[in-house]
Image (tube, rainbow, N blue to C red):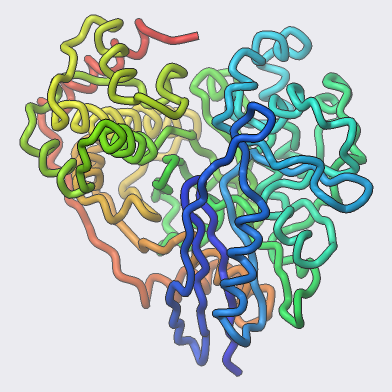
Length: 475
């Protein structure tokens, strides 16, 4: 019997609803609703507009008509505070708000970095949930902390749960036990009762107007990897959108000091496995650059930016995409120029030079990350599957293949939504598991292969890039 599901895929800048029908092994899907996810200001902080998003959710449900189930996937680390009255205490704070900018020194004075990493397996980033909670002024008013996908499930059903993949982005979950780290919670005086019961992906949370609401992999990266059209043990993945998450699947977490120093992260994935990866800033850098030029009266399309980048001199200058000075909204082109000046490099003058700098720096950072992952796992990768919105950026795909020196298979474009859809179908008993889901996706979705032709120029640029990053680490 045919099943129809509705996948809500929320990024930090846009939200979408994808309706899919699965019948006799055939999958059909299309986007039925899209909206801008624009942050708001509340009490001097950058926050998420949950009321607006929920209104868009209900609009999409009305447009969808009859569906059997729905589910949410979102970005990681952010959360909402639900009070005893069942309502949000305040709008959820955005991870790009600067309230956690200086929290790490204080936090790590209570629990050293090696211990914190061994307990949680997460790359230690000031945006992680733990550090947000340590700066949370409204926490005493909360009865429950709900991560963003769990929050929207609660707002529709009234039922609270904490799905494991999204919890594993928090810097509080132990990836070995798949439970909260008592050491971390005790050290930072965080009450375990603040969190809803942990549930696995595929759990039916409840119903909304007769529609089953399923907790799929709440973290969008884990949904995307579920849709990777391969079962090869030698494949790496790059889920690329606002953020870039590059890594591989492993049976067990890697919790060594070397892994922590390489800023690698362990997140719980489908099939009871671990996605071992690095978080790298992604196409947000291009998006933010485009916004800043528009604000100053220069309204370029993405095609314009790519064309100018292609026409510009290669390897003119580089940035660390994850430099703290480049992480906040506003005036990114000037921040990039300042970074280049401060690192004794040529300063990009033209739009093309600046955009090419971003593209090349991302591709080189991917190479660095994949080398670190290979060293930590002993794996040798023979292909990179590039998933999500970044697949539409041919210039990025080309540069990534050249930088890594292995083929890049781009697609499916809708990997995150497809993973969400397949996990719902697994929960409904229509698909046996992720292996079958990947087989279906590989047989039905278009991909594009980018061959590599790494040259001496890329190797030379990579050595220069590593030197810049090593000698100019920002605190």
